[in-house]
Image: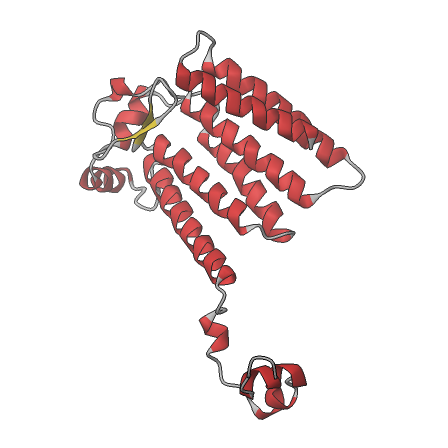
Length: 238
């Protein structure tokens, strides 16, 4: 827990320094936080009493830092997404933290939206949306993809289909299409988790459950105190 808090504090400080302008290399700042969080994960996995919620939180923060390194072109998008997926799986198998899962899916969506050029990283660390994709490749920082693959990723759908037909690989998708679908799936998953989170927090309960009719056997098993609440008329003080 201490390592997690230190790594989280270092990540917050890195974001603050970059936002306010600093002479330090942003990659160095994020890498230092990444190292502390990696140590926290190793300690958690080697511990005799592993805490699933703690490990999921470490993986989540680790994925967020890796996401920033993806924006700087130092880590492949798939690696950062895999870390966040591990956080989701760990939370799903144990404490089922819907808030963490929803945020992790949104982080994955950001990673793949950046990979296809729908968002770019500004010098102060903020993200900027590019409505029509990235027409000007010079606006984007250097990434791990080559110029040829970037140019190919922004071809029109008709051009992609025709090139696949010529090559005889109509069933295959290029990297840009895969990343676009991955971003779409991540957003849909985040929406589903948010709906489940809201349903669980409703004071009136889930209408899918509360609107179901009770059979005779279920009515016989209703506790007395619950029957009193359902059919009695209360008078204050009586």
